[in-house]
Length: 343
Image (tube, rainbow, N blue to C red; front, side, top):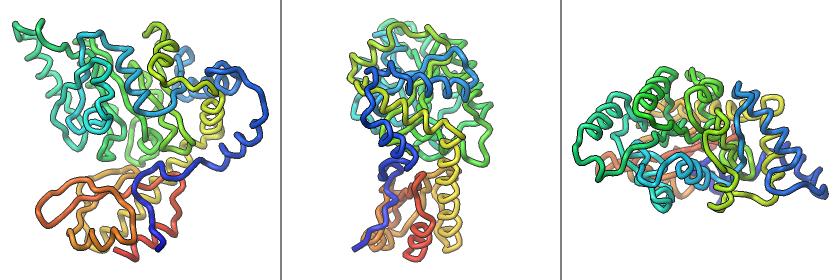
């Protein structure tokens, strides 16, 4: 039986233009470890897109490795990272951050986001505690954009977190595994230059946004971290055939391809949401990106699972389940229409 797959946004291989270019250079000999001309070109294009001519850009093999390397690089051994309780590093990184010796300090989530006033209050209590020298010091704030719920930070929210980080001497780090889909959302006021202006580090996701694999870690202010190349290798995130990463990002950041394919995924998600709502299915949360969370009766969910792949999310009550449908850069409109005929 043909199963429609909406489980995640990295189920397809790679954008055809990347595949074409990879095939073209297949027999070229290139310098290893990202010291090749394709990585140089991609880095320059990313700097231009971010409005940061002096930024450091590194290509790593995957999101978990990128988060672990970046967080380890910015934190002292006695520091931890603050994240929403639903944050990816707290829920779905298999202890990768803790394995590096850093505690994940959680705050309540609000539509997947952390609130600036709650962050400030947590820090106020920490520094008012006479026993704080016996405690893990908050040294970094972690956010993802989009969040695990497909929601987005606003420019004002990001600036608010930046002010608090500056006040308490903390780094601000943004996980951009699905950043393309966030930048393509019609309602967003966040841009790459604004993210670069307010974050100490962030990464541009490739794995979930058209690349075969890989992420681009951006450190807007050069020299912020010492020996980043060595740190990346030490933690197993350095690809020897680095040009395979460089060429992919060079392609994604040529002629706006990264934005175009992200916008298409969001358009397919909007079509899916409109169709589900027209049939009376309630959305669990307002997600303007490529992830749509719908509340299904358990019997409907069980029947649908025979024909459609989706992701279990949570149980709001005994008789219903929240499931996630994810579109991607490669989602076909006819597959969205077929899904809507099945629900």
